[in-house]
Each structure stands twice: as structure tokens, then as C-alpha cells.
Length: 161
Ligand code: COA
Image (tube, rainbow, N blue to C red):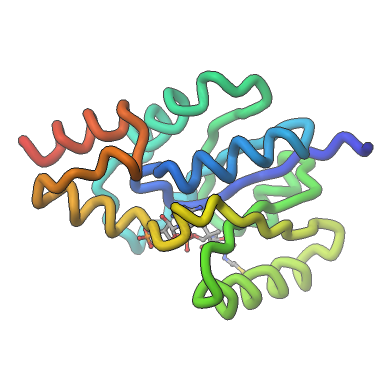
């Protein structure tokens, strides 16, 4: 099998068990996975870039071939700078498809040498997203099964402040 570097981009505000499930599966398929935080000046995330990095680092500590990074600007340019041959995206439900299809085709147009690989998380995470997790945490709901323990602690700290 070819040794391929894959990037897994996202906002990760915060990383959830659904993301982690994809990262763990991707680790079996690629030489190296770079989980990279998209720093978008138009978004006002709950966790800072450094906090989001720390969360991902902690919850992927058991995986040997994972790196954590962040980027600004065009994803394809970032992928090129990392010699990545693959962009990983999670497909949770059919509702993700239109947006992901547009993203993947645009990225292919910009660089045909970089392939988007779609991966499905376990169905128990198919309805999950970070906004939902943030909202539930703000109401102190029980979200233990959606996020790793460390992320739960940090979310509780955020909403206590
Ligand atoms: N489990 C749980 N939740 C998941 C998930 C999974 N496996 N996969 C995605 N999600 C959720 C995320 O938590 C996020 O939730 P939120 O909207 O509530 O915060 C949502 O799905 C969107 O996912 P995310 O992966 O964070 O995508 P995004 O839309 O924020 O980011 C980029 C997409 C960063 C890849 C894209 O905007 C990009 O490439 N930006 C750089 C600029 C660029 O190159 N633009 C041209 C692109 S063609």
C-alpha cells in the first residue's frame, strides 16, 4: 500500500467522539493523519485555536500517527504544503452530501492530485455536531457519551466562568 499523508480539517469547536471515531479509523488507512483546525476569522469559536489544539492532542494521545496543526487560508494550499495526498471528510447523513460534494469538487478543481476521502462515523454519532454539544453543555445536560472525558471537563470549565 502507498504511504499517504492525509489531512483531516475542521473547526473542532470542540472535538467530539464522532470526530475521534473518524480519526481512529483513518489511522488504520494512512501513514500519517494531520488533524488541522481551520482558523476562520468569520467564526467566533467557544474554544480558542490553542485550546482546540490542546483538546485534540489530549484525546488522540493514544494514536501514534496523528499530528495536530492549524491553518488559515485555502485548504488545498495547506494540503500541498504538507505533501498530503488525501483530505478526509466525515459524512454523517445524506444532509451532509450537497455541501461536501461542492467542497470536494472545488478542491479537486484547484488540485486534481489531492483526493477527498469520505468516511462514515459509527451510526451512533451520525446526528452529532459541535454546536449541539456546545448548546447541551451550556444547559448542563448529560453529554458524556458524545465527547471524551477531557473535553467534558474543559466544557464545564468554560460554562462555569
Ligand atoms: N462527528 C461529529 N461532528 C462532525 C463530524 C463528525 N464525524 N464531522 C463533522 N462534524 C460537524 C462539526 O462538528 C461541525 O459542527 P458545527 O457546524 O456545529 O460546528 C460541522 O459538522 C461542520 O464540520 P467541520 O468539519 O467543522 O466543517 P466546517 O464546515 O467548519 O469546515 C473546512 C470545513 C474547514 C474544511 C472548509 O471550510 C475549508 O476548507 N476552509 C478553508 C478555506 C477553503 O479552502 N475554502 C474553499 C473550500 S472548497
